[in-house]
Image 1: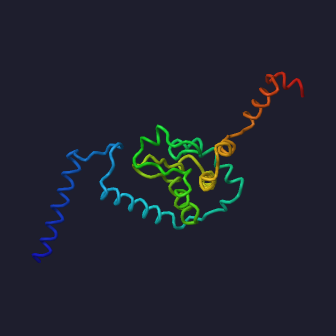
Image 2 (image 1 turned 180 degrees about the vertical axis):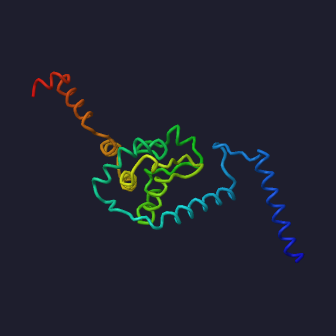
Image 3 (image 1 turned 90 degrees about the vertical axis):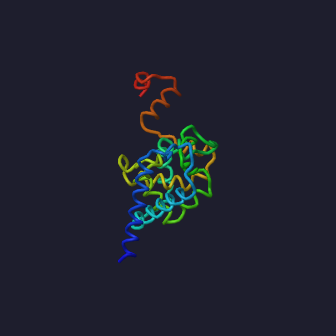
Length: 197
């Protein structure tokens, strides 16, 4: 009985100590200072195991389709490139200021983890649900699953792209953009082009 009371007392003292440290404000949470190795490993393990557990039942579509890869490019450029970079861009103001540093998706070694089915599931889950206290938003709040899978397909091909290929695959072309481009190339205003038809 004394042994159990001793364990209970020790646990209570540890919990009170943790509470005092947390509420004292002495823990620096600035993004410009790294975690201690112990805290970093704890958080990385919690993150990776959580994503692994939460993503295990996700069904992966065919990510090799060219239309899926190309449709994910524009979303990647608008939503991801500021943190996860693009060909020829080593860093941005945003990527330099985040801690932990976001993965660089132009690096083949980094993207290798998304090439497997399990890796694709984890990447999709992270895009959809975000990651707390990391700067990674939950894009599932504003995007459907198809768009997020297209981003995964694009990310898997990103390390193989040069700047020109990246630009072509990430340019969003809609009817208005095409019409404006056509009109400016022909030197016509909207009314003049209508008269020509």
